Amino acid sequence: MARTLISGGTVVTATDTVDADVLVEGESIVGVAAGDHGWSAGADRVIDASGKYVIPGAIDAHTHFDLPFGGTFVSDDFETGTRAAAHGGTTTIIDFANQLKGELVMDGFAAWMEKAEGNCAIDYAFHMIVGDVTEDALKQMDTLIGEGVTSFKLFMAYPGVLYSDDGQIFRMMQRAAETGTTIMMHAENGIAIDVLREQAIQRGQTDPKYHTTTRPPTTESEAVHRAIILAEIAGAPLYIVHMSAKEAVVELTRARDRGLNVFGETCPQYLFLDWERHVCAAGFEGAKYVCSTPIRPRAEGHQEYLWNALARNDLQIVSTDHAGFYYDDDLDGPRRLGRQKRLGQDDFTAIPNGLPGVEERLNVMYQGGVVDGRISLNRWVEVCCTAPAKMFGLYPKKGAIAVGSDADIVVFDPDAPFTYSADTIHMNVDYTAYEGMRISGKPAVVMSRGKVIVENDTYLGSKGDGQYLRREPSQMLI
Ligand code: URP
Ligand code: ZN
Ligand code: ZN
Image (cartoon, rainbow, N blue to C red):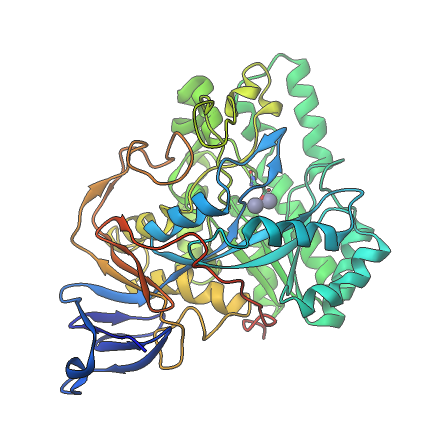
């Protein structure tokens, strides 16, 4: 078995920062030690990590690849999406298999397994979106657990599409409590939002900026509160995805302070972007930043509130909710997707919801979090790498630099400045939400199960390197 020594770096985990060497044999970490251990003699390759951080490969617990959505398809499939993820230091994604209304849940799961198999650059797992809570779907949760799916996503938004009513949600939560699995919730009051959207369009308010005004913070906080209470009655663990409103985080914090097993995720777009600059001032280009929950006004203080919540563990995880759509057309591109965001040129309700981001997360969180002094180096590793592994039953195989863990390792150079630009990203999309943002550091080497897949911005892996991961139940529960 090939032996690689990562030498002279600073190993940063969720809890510790130590100068140590890491020895990799085959696909696993077999040694972490400082001082004179004699490992270089038997190594096939020595990677010089001096002046660099050695961190666990990042885990993005919320991506959407190859998903039909908003009248079109997200622009990244598993091949392009996971390769872009690897460039950004992400070595595991957890995507969402999708059951649409009228479909059998196991057919949805099989379809997503087929989309991913043989195409991924990095390891992958699935949550299951249950878009039609039927007797069959409730029963098949056991089958899915056998397949390594231990989390199920429901929607309180998108009536008529993926929406579940309170009775359906509660029945899923009861089954989650019985089976030791987790309910993930898109928490927005979709019924009220649909009324507000219809009224806005009737008033002639068709611009992208009305996407945010028709989803006020209370539509998020009400749904978060309701989901928490339903989960409390059912006794089920609950994970709220893509939180953006401070009022919603207040609800989550209150419930966590009561000792409930409830957890919250936010995404870089809610920490870095704001409605005033990215949506209002941008005219129709604001469509690039239309996602749900929406980008919120900075004047209301959501962004700073989310950063503080992340720092004090009122929010636990940063994922991307990666769902890219072309702004202009991609008719010459690999998937010939047409003008995606422009589908809503005359009506913001027709803009496909979602932002790309799987490539930038680790780097922008390093810049905005660590360099700008909002979170510590260890907290950066925790929210991007370790907490997602624990939350979704992958720890310590993933999310750790420890003997026995998979050798998913990022050698991160904190002194490698660059600027984000649509011209240099690897995602299959024609813009980055972080255009022009200057970043101080980035991955120098990305290793997935012992294989170097990215080095100095060059992709060295192959399609199909990534393996399907069967997950255990959450390891974050109290
Ligand atoms: O706008 C979003 N979030 N698009 C992706 C689908 C979802 O709701 O997570
Ligand atoms: Zn969602
Ligand atoms: Zn999502």
